[in-house]
Image (cartoon, rainbow, N blue to C red; front, side, top):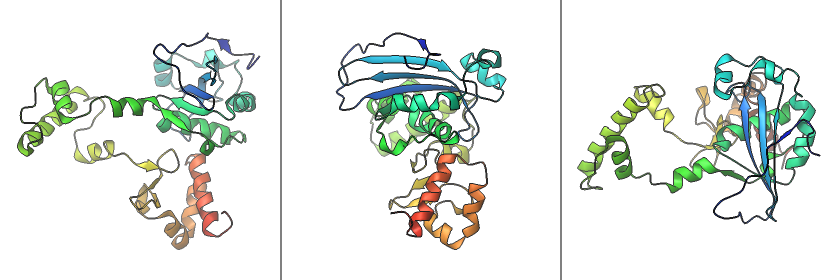
Length: 274
């Protein structure tokens, strides 16, 4: 039986249609000590493995994160230090978890931005080889955002409760855009800062190389740094002209996967990795 410490939660049935699968897919979700990918740890992981023949297996296990769980995190997921003190560490379950997920694609909700990079960190931290680049990732949140109407007319109706007359005329669209932004600031005042620098960063999406977004692809498809003094500068150029920058990142509290990607780019530049 997989993971003796798991609580069996029963099967999950898709109500509308079965997935057309060539490989197994594992949907998973993490509860953690926080949202810092390089520092925080898993306190609970739930996995739902769906086989091409329709068979489904779901398990959930709590994990001792080997660090205190901040109160604000516990208030979100309801898991406290006392609840996990006798639970296995991630190191103790990592190899069997990797075997369970071997050869599977991965799915989740907002998983590409959080769950996938944090899980990759945990595997790297305990020395278990689980190459994320061999997987296909399905982020249900992204599908939701792309498939549900996200036009200005829909936003105007949702945030301002108004019908956008003369949609797609420049004057009407610019006025509606301004009103929607003000309505968003009012609605999400506890999450949005009312300054352009914050809003600019908040509304920007990048094609990330390292999951966490410290290295992204630019419009030319080049790997560039996405932070600090070298933001926007090709990684290979920085490594060649500023050799100390590599050492600084490797010895700082960046995610392990970011360091792994950076090392591969460096080795590729020296011809040691092809």
